[in-house]
Image (cartoon, rainbow, N blue to C red):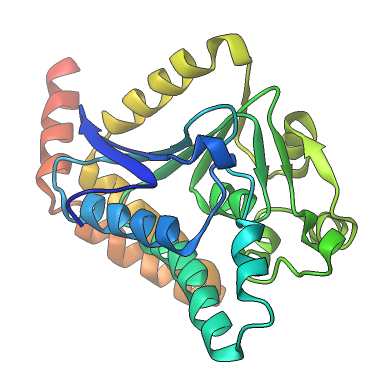
Length: 255
């Protein structure tokens, strides 16, 4: 796609910046937005100048979840269509997990339902202290089914089921306590602090970040011995990169 209607995408100083861009609908997700988001991630993955991807939301909210109007329009619909649409969301979460670059979610306002899932699927989540998180699907007789696998890997089993079963919307402070986010940032300095964080991350070795992310998630389903062996392989491969050679030379010059 050369143009987007429901997201924006730009690159600057090694950062691929993706913004969900439906502020009038609190950046609610529909199939077009999901498809555009997946396309932007593919573009960022193949752009050698991009070292970090930043995902944010236009306006006051990160993302309010799926656009319920599309559900009403489809009712009663048909199972085959529902499966195709669900797989688009599932594909997005897999795209994020498999993306070669670190993905940072910058969350202001509400991150609910699928929006909370997108935030949680990011490698790092930075949240304004006024942000809110939750999976309220149960309140309309629905299930946060696709995002469940991501949530269970981020928080304890008891916390995950509580969020799913109660549909509670929690504060950013509670999300930090639960382990859903990495950092809590004062809303007044949020943009500046996020920029500082992603700029610093983008200054790191691209090859090392890419290899570290791939190994980190690949070991998720491995037995301990296999994970150690995979680490040994990546350790050896990392020593052959130009970034490592330059890093060693720089270190030796300092000493």
